[in-house]
Length: 166
Image 1: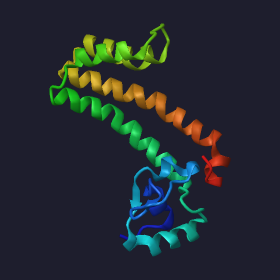
Image 2: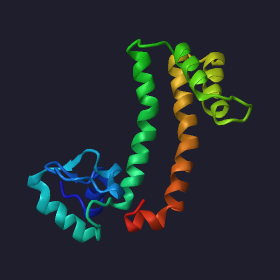
Image 3: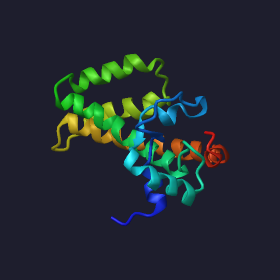
């Protein structure tokens, strides 16, 4: 593969060397909670930092977008896996979410994302199962709310992100 520096920088989620034994700087604790690269990659990472003008242990700005996309994608997939593995049913999942969420006023985030998916999947006459319908609607509703939110958070924090202090 012939990846650009920006592409490699975008996938380097954690900035701690695997051999790190020292104290983690408080300002980079989140970025250094897991190893990000191995000793054999040290020279390459040093060059990456130089090419992308990254401070030591800081992240490339696009990595924040990649991480948000990853989290958004997998949050529904993990719930769907739990139902597929019969850890609980869709109905039990709905009730767990309902209980954990707290208040549920009309127009609330719970109502717009989870309640909407639940109601649509129960009343849908398509040939798909209620389970499939619920996760399809839940995924769409979640993406429609979280993607603009994550984009706005990125924009709102651009100065700190580019300075490596976010």
